Image 1 (cartoon, one colour):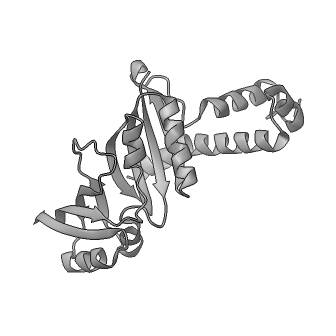
Image 2 (cartoon, rainbow, N blue to C red):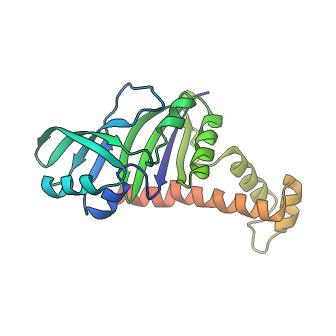
Length: 221
């Protein structure tokens, strides 16, 4: 069952991350293309920034940019082809390897907001593991099954996090006072208290990111 996932990624050496941190107000998105080569390092970008000379100076200094070519520029925005340096952190390769697609990629804060089309949750887990191994911060904002047309949103929770939160809730862990201790919930789940605590914490973080924080961001926009 295919899924669509929205994730936010950050790392000092993600593509154009130094430019994002330096140029206030710059907006960048990746232009969709049909390239399926997992080793590709050249991508088209749409970059919005009023001062092209300052932008070009930053691109010259950006350690994630090997070279760039301006294709067209109008009204404070330009289309560029950028080649990344070997040390640039990319998730495009692992997304292609799991037979996924980057549907939409744009900058947000000091990182990238990415919408992924993936064959299943196992593919998302592979991407998450790749990010973790490479020191890339990856926050899952939203996941939904494409067969449901988005009607069964999982709010960024993995199956394990959803099970942990559901069990803890049903057993009264979130009650006041609590009806069950963390160690008892962990034992029921077959986990250590430390593992259970981490799973609950990550699950609640993803819930907040997918509901409260995401809604506030959309309202501000």
